[in-house]
Amino acid sequence: MIIFLYGPDDYRRSEKKRSIIAEFSKKRLEIGVGIFDLEEKTALENLGEFLKTQSIFESAKLAVLENAFELDAPKLAKLLKPFIEEKNITVLVAEKDKPVKALAFLLEKPAISQKFDALAGAEWSAFIRAEAKKNGAELTPAAVQFLGAVYEGNTWGLVTELQKLAGLGTPREAAGGSTAAGPIDKEDLDIFDLEVAPNYWGLINGLKNYEMKNRLYALETMLAANDPPAKIFNILASQWQEKTPHMAEYDLAVKSGKVDYEEALVDLLIS
Image 1 (cartoon, rainbow, N blue to C red):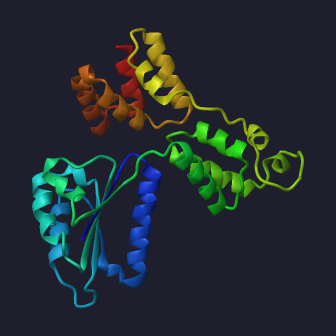
Image 2 (image 1 turned 60 degrees about the vertical axis):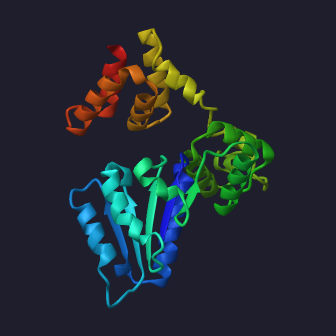
Image 3 (image 1 turned 180 degrees about the horizontal axis):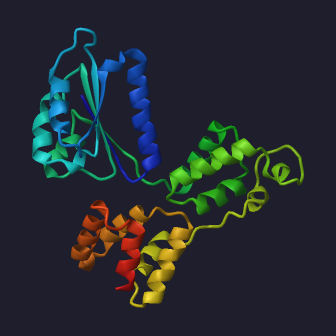
């Protein structure tokens, strides 16, 4: 059996992956779980041995693939296809993007696939309320709406904030204010100086602005919001087609240790 999880919502995708591994591990021995980072040179060989070798201690196996799309796709497809309908072997692949043509079978039955799109509207509000409840916090509709605007498209950030709020108790009480019991309201959140994030894609476009000062302002705003430089770089690389050759050179420089992603971004935007 092959399970393929994909889509831009890293948090929900990662949580599903974690739950599958945890559920398998509850019923099986540790030797039945193998994690393979396919960026490593011997990973494909090790994966093949794991899938084909039968253990006298454990009949069921779970192979978890990391960075699956970094490998030669046809080679990986050739290795995985024989196990699509294997009952005692599960291969778990979780990636942000859809697979290339050679691995398109990951999206087709009998493989099991699940997509994790960024939530919006009523689904996003319902998710916020559910995660708040899971963390022991209760939110008013105004607080839900505000947090939804602040963390739009950033599920990890939202969950981190909810965990922090739950740990602090009522924000007004933590700040020395009212100790009245009740759900967390918008005015409680104001105490922590949360601000609605600027339009993300507007900032990405700002990085491509004709004026250098506007490009640098957009970068400064994103870095001030603790957006990882690597994330900014990779999104920009996918959006700025005319700079693809330059971005590839910078990416190589980063991976060879000559510069970091923030330095590469600054150098790119002032050139």
